[in-house]
Length: 301
Image (cartoon, rainbow, N blue to C red; front, side, top):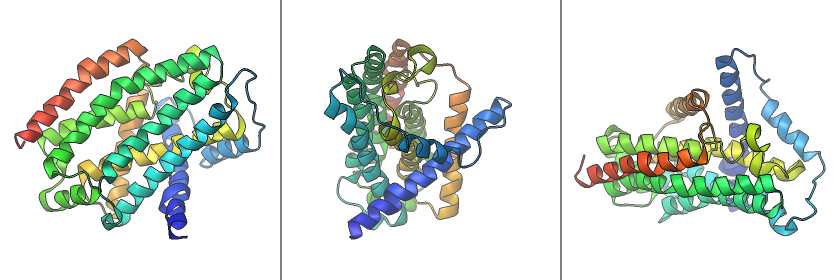
């Protein structure tokens, strides 16, 4: 019963509601940048409700079981991460040994589910979207791990409680030279994890008509939509915990809104990259900065 309560709050329910609000902020700010009015406050929740009252359509030549279970697994994985991250925000004592590594692995699962679901649909455009998603994951994930190595090296721990405690005593990791470089690298990587412009390559509505999601409809598409809402909350909070240290409620909201604004500005000031451009950017542009931050962390900077 206690575990069920934690999954609901601060896990699924709280994160879904907060993610819907964050999605509205994103869409509203984007509209203002483009001199439009933007959607009403409850529009993200209307979108999900509309999907859940629609019929599920299964492609005739799809792998039915994989196609249907992929969005459910994606939602389940981000719910577990939301629970771990949320409990550590409330009280770091709720953490467990290796919880940082567990979260990093679970954050990869939604992307893998997109790849599996799209590949199982039998649609060539969805397969193209899956191929792009796979290449994107292989490109940004190494840089993401390199950035996360900095707080691990500085604290000699893979537990949230130790990383947060270290920053409570010594200041935020992002306040050091290695920390700020790693933090910037991680922000760009989560832009790709969120599939936001310039890294919305697997979806690319103007090119491949929705790409990986083209065959999804009804509640199955709703599960993916909710997962995206929740990731918009979980990923920034995850970075704030390990790079910006302990936060009270009001300061935490301000820091989150600052990071969300950066994500939105990156989305609205850059054109979509081609997949080969994205791979080159992460491997030959961003990864070296991650390596530099690791070297600086080792020598104590």
